[in-house]
Amino acid sequence: MYRTHTCGELRIQDVNKHVILCGWIQRSRDLGGMTFIDLRDRYGITQLVFNMETNAGLCREARKMGREFVIQAEGSVAERSNKNPKMPTGDIEIMVEKLVVLNESLTPPFTIETETDGGDELRMKYRYLDLRREPLRNNLWLRHRMAFEARHYFNARQFIEIETPVLIKSTPEGARDYVVPSRINPGQFYALPQSPQTFKQLLMVAGYDRYVQIVKCFRDEDLRADRQPEFTQIDCEMSFVGQDDILTMFEGMIKHLFKTIKGIELKDSFLRLSYEEAMEQYGNDKPDIRFEMKIAELTAIARGKGFGVVDSAPYTGGICVKGCSSYSRKQLDELTEFVKRPQIGAKGLLYVKYETDQSIKSSVDKFYATDDLKKWVDCFNAQPGDLILVMAGEKLPTLRALSELRLEMGNRLNIRSKEVFKPLWVIDFPLLEWDDEANRFFAMHHPFTSPKQEDISLLDADPGKVRANAYDCVINGVEVGGGSVRIHNENLQKKMFRVLGFSDEEAERQFGFLMHAFRYGAPPHGGIAFGFDRLVSLFAGEDSIRDVIAFPKNNAARDVMIDTPSEISDDQMKELSIRIERMKD
Ligand code: ASP
Image 1 (cartoon, rainbow, N blue to C red):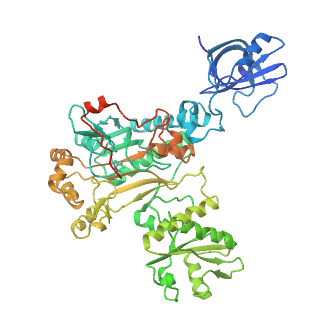
Image 2: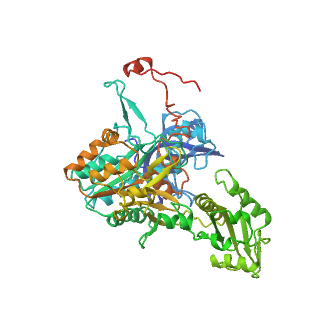
């Protein structure tokens, strides 16, 4: 037997047991006549003790072993005189009688402990070493349990997990595809799925009325903390349901995860905000509602007092920050710099301080009398001691800038606790989004999303006004899922492609398989996909999804451990009938 117990298992009740443990040497310390080794495996750490007086030979052997050696230690469990309450095994230690080195290790390039000295790239290169660290082990364990509980929830509700293909067809909508050349069909390519969207719809046509799949998806996009070239979705679809049924079912899954994984009972139904409300109140279609600080519009009351910036702006709005009227000049300048950053792009920031003595001070005293500013104050229902921050400009960019400022103030005031979770649904998204560059509409969600019944007549007259039966699930400012009720009628689907600028032939070529399927009894259906990596990172309190993925890619879409993407041999290229021509810049 290699081992009788794991390194996370033994407790005070096990004292005097004879045990064998296997693991990696995290660190060792020589203190006088004793040597202590922290032995680690994925379950925890147990302290091994070697005594120079009672067994000098073994102790000397132990002193020769370096970090990350894999060893087998046999001995008896003893109560520690110097207990460590921070460790689950901290009451005991193993008095080692026999030691076997199972494998040696080079000195690792960084310390494999909770706090490490290794930089990001180095840890990515030696990911198998990084994965030995407790925070990552915890994250992978959490990920496993969340996947397990999600499946448990769906299984209990007649969902069936069905795998869909990974080599599929490239389509022009959505993000950029990753493509795979076909050797057998020279000059032709598969695409890796951005999501199994059309397949899950075909499964509905096939009658599998509750589908789920925890599935890898691939999108060739610019990367950020919450994006990876390949990522995982909990992909779901249901038939014979309307929006309300879908929201209820998947709200249930989120609640189930919170309850079983975090012990948090989310009793209330999730708030449902329309896209329009989310934009007006938070400047964002994924609002963080852990704190209020809603945006209020001041356009009408701020105009006409001779202040050009406001008078010429289509929109003026602001936020009210509780208890911050004492903000100094320097702090306000910092905020102004913050909103002027190119990513945010505001021209400037106005402030109104509603002082604790009820006087009002502002950066626009020249244009506004106290009575005018009192109206601003009333707009926010501000209390003495509050600070109002205002911006003016084009409506959408100003709302977006206010949203960034609101989140920044939330950070500064420490009211975005990672321990608090506030989920909501954002519903009634616009069906289409105009793109100036392409000079056409794009589907805001995807082209299979159904318009609201009452808006269908606008599809010709004013497509930009049509609302969709589409929804996002948002938690703490993170979009964790999105979906829609689908079109299940061939003619409406054709019409949608026309609005998106496809000719009938093009639509037929790209999506004929789906529209043909609609001729054979397509049931009403709809669904959602959750970004599983995001959901796990939210539960883990991590800022980047990389920390919850075993083998992620870096920001240049590279796997630095296996060193890919990489060139392939000339023979492989020939077989694929591909020749690379370097393009001149
Ligand atoms: N396939 C969609 C996506 O990946 C989700 C859905 O509509 O179900 O965003």
